[in-house]
Image (cartoon, rainbow, N blue to C red; front, side, top):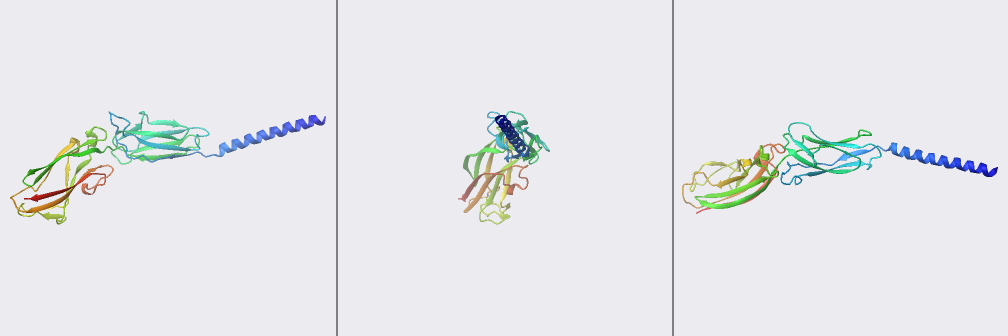
Length: 271
């Protein structure tokens, strides 16, 4: 009889231990409050048709814990204002995940408003949410000087060419490209050209000059507009070529910080 009682008591204690352990596990799961964070997304250019993944930008959606103990997380790309478009690299705009995931973002149309694209991640079990904003903007690339020659009469001629990150120059429309020329040792904001060899007219210093951006090329002549004859003169100018994104960096071209393409020191000596 004593052995039977001992057996019953042991079984009861064992069952109590199992229930206690199971209860602790349930409490551990239910007491967790999953969180989500979203990384920053840099400027996203429109994808290039010949190499669609070239301009993709990465972003990581971090879940804690990962994987989620229950439910899932929905990740969406939306537009909040203006025009513009972006997708994930498979062409979709919505994803469902249960663990930390890195996505590729692909631009399909330029944003007309800064940071008007939004990526939002929301956990289903507790509605925890995080988001980040970004812009789809296509910039100049492969800017280069083709040649620089002295064509005479105090005229230095240069040829420049450039491409679009997307491979389509039309995607640069609405932005600016040009030069800012500062004349070294001359008065600011206006100086008078030395006469002779030039007609003594006033010129802004520095002088900004814009060229048509969607052509992908320009010919630049560095000279005084009216050359009247030979006389000793040496002029040094610093020529800075710039690209300006009119959505991300609006304002005066002379002070734009979007993208500096090149800087040249030019010396004009006569004779």
